[in-house]
Amino acid sequence: MLASIQRWPPVLVGAAALLVATAAVLLTVAMAPLLPRLGGGRAEAATVTVRVGDTWFCDPTGPQPCGQPHDTAVNVGDTVVWEWGPGGSGTLVVHTTTHCADNFTTCGGPKEWDSSPAKTTGTFSHPFGAADAGKTFLYRCEIHPTTMQGRIIVQAATPTPTSTPTPTATPTSTPTPGPGVDTDGDTIPNGTDIDDDNDGYVDTDETTKGSDPFQATSTPEHADGIDNDADTVIDEQPAGANWDIDADTVVDSLDASVDTDGDGVSNTTDLDDDGDGIKDSIERKMSTDELGDCPTNTSHDAWPSDRDRDKDADIGDVIASFNGKILNPKAYDARSDADGDHDNDIGDIIILYGNAKILTKCAVFTFTNNTGGAVDDIHIQWMSAIAEVFSARDSDRKGWSNRTISGGGLTLDMDRPDAQGDLASGGQLRTVVRGTSPIVSSCQWTLDGVNKGTC
Image (cartoon, rainbow, N blue to C red; front, top):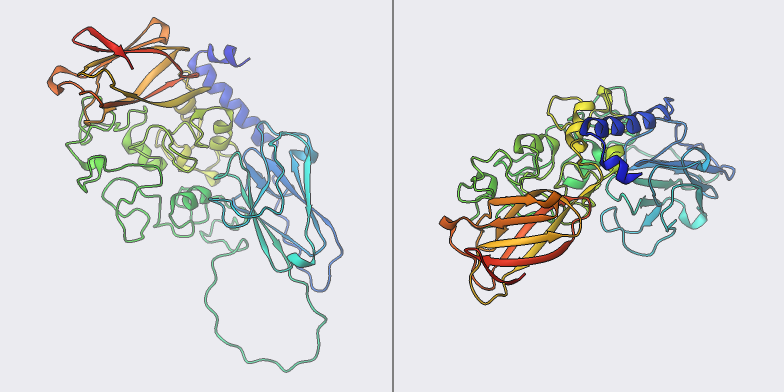
């Protein structure tokens, strides 16, 4: 099945992705969210259901998808049941519900529950007892840790009221906007709004990237000389990124001496600094890393087609990018707007997943020159076909801009232009390629066409 999809024409691939996303939308329920059960006194033990979807945790009677982290209020003695699809009927991709004792990012510490191994059908339950009263439990999907997050809020038991004098009111500080507040005034409460400040960037994306999801003037940071996230620090790079490869304190996107993708065009002239096929101007609007072509960790949003940051472009990415957002202005997501026209539509799907990008991976390879002499060319044979080279730059920060893919994608020849000199013994070449499953079969270094040994 996957092999046959890969042979489809690019437009059909994009259309197929759209159909999947649209089908998921049609399965959602457009009902108002259920208010948390906060009634006074000791509530009778109950079962509270959380729907597990692609890729979200939501109230099964409310909008789906919904804002993440999703809050669920329960009483002492209640049991929470997570259902993979309606009644456990199934999701398209695998998920878990896993307790995080510390925070959503590291998800460390002793776990109260973990539904692993990941699955696509069924249910999972966990009870909350007297010892849990007044506590808030964080949880996430271990497969989609940055896009699927939730909180279980266990209400403290209400004691039997006694006659006491009316206390004198004391001023309190303003709390962080809660799930019932509508920060942006769009009639969608924060608890179900995917973009609480209506700046175009969904809350989960802003939280991961360090901007304030409740402040429209705070958006994810970019390498552009501007304090985008309004934290008084300019151009702070995300974890896993490198925005100053020559360590000269000038951010690389503004540095005329740097050629990030090694294509022979300086970053200040190059429209696509990282060579991943999406222009820098669009990546800044999408909030992806314009200087990174393949994720270095699960929070590094480098390749626009890889929404869940696992180094591939698959159905999970299509769902995360477009489920519930296609031609839906209230669910607009700048991260999915690949053509920068302020909507999410079929054109965005084709750009991100058409042209045979769906079901391909980005892969990073580092080759060390251990020949004992200089080299200026590399010949690589692949186990399976590659489709393109995102970047090729060596440890001297020189680009290997002459690149030829041949043999149906099974052969890649690259060389360092003569004007750039040769790569000395011990030097390294880093290249990023895209293919269905990039694995090197063999590799040879050459100098001026003479074989110098294996890579």
